[in-house]
Image 1 (cartoon, helix red, strand yellow):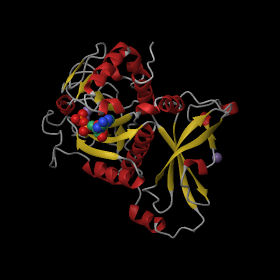
Image 2 (cartoon, protein in one colour):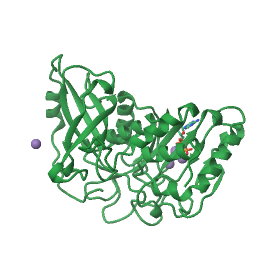
Image 3 (cartoon, rainbow, N blue to C red):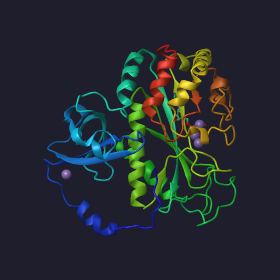
Image 4 (cartoon, rainbow, N blue to C red):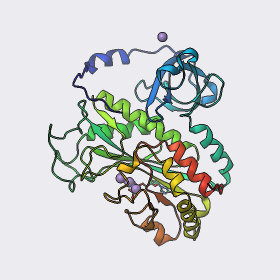
Length: 364
Ligand code: ADP
Ligand code: MN
Ligand code: MN
Ligand code: MN
Ligand code: MN
């Protein structure tokens, strides 16, 4: 998904600022429509002017794009629809301008094959009485324009893993500017970001979104990915969501999915959590199919992962498929952590299958 290039093509941001600071007419608002393309992993976006600040996605009209250029339609019938589903404050254009998460629909008004939100929303509506909450831990790796991890010696490797996780200092934390800018941008946009940390592999970082209820979790995670890509773009750095960007003794990147229902959060909810884990175990293979491309490179049973072919669980065990956090074991209620999803997963697909398996009793 990432490219190797030494053409930087960077521009002088101080000149840009003069124009961004120009006053914007009262009756003009920029709405940037964002969608997932045909890969199911990459984002695309284009901007239009609307005449007033929207307060709900329902106030924005459907739009369209050339689906033949995004792997979402044939050239002969290429118009693909964008349906606005969630709006956020735009930290790049600021003011009244908005970022708009969209679903994609074919000319026939059926969801495109990479539109996993359509089904997810149906599941969330059916399970609304369970009050499903998600906390998503998004890991990612920063890469230089040549495709090598940001800040790593060219043609070589940094010192082995050990000092980097939550590390501080010049040779420990590589690319902190990007994660700090991203944190503030998420808060400004209205993303419920709950934390961030440097990861085990140098130039790898994590942030958490949530807890969010229902469809909101995946909407916000996708929007946060857009913000990250745009911010890194300004620093001329690439973001990789590959689950194992560097083979060997370097940690992979996941998207641990913390999940709870109302019953799990109530006293003695641990019993409900254990029942849920039993249901997850039965459908292990089906879940793995929805948890991201190339996850086998990551789920090896090493580097704080469980083997992709075997379901396992345990309290406080970071080598298991599904972990019960220590505090949840102590308090006997709370949530479970599904450690299997890869960093490149589609959170619509992940939260959808979890709710279907645990709340809606779906079986294979
Ligand atoms: P880890 O110890 O695995 O690194 P993190 O602190 O990175 O855990 O992430 C835990 C996530 O779980 C956070 O996003 C947090 O908001 C979320 N979370 C906390 N309580 C709940 C809950 N009851 N249901 C779902 N998610 C929760
Ligand atoms: Mn054109
Ligand atoms: Mn974490
Ligand atoms: Mn992590
Ligand atoms: Mn975790």
